Length: 113
Image 1: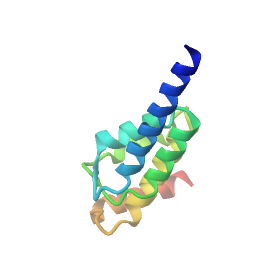
Image 2 (image 1 turned 45 degrees about the horizontal axis):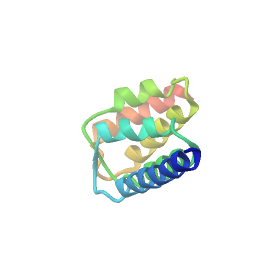
Image 3 (image 1 turned 90 degrees about the vertical axis):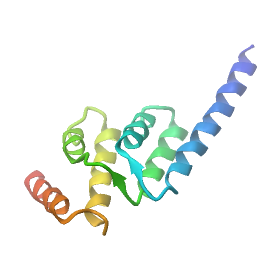
């Protein structure tokens, strides 16, 4: 029974990892998807790594989640704080980010340093 459970968990993890990695190839994602990816950071190591890699490939996030990301910079989880900083960095460099959002990111970044 243990090997069957272990085998199922391994196959589920592989599916979960593949699904997370595929998200990184979308043109844009929603804030709900970002939230789901951040939850994946709290999963096992391989799923966590896939989520972090996916965050580096996201070209655009639909919706405004800047306030949420700024709050998460102080999250108890270092993983959530790290990816929030990464997302803010990606948004700040993206050509698709509205100028007023970019200015807000820079303004908040200057206060944190």
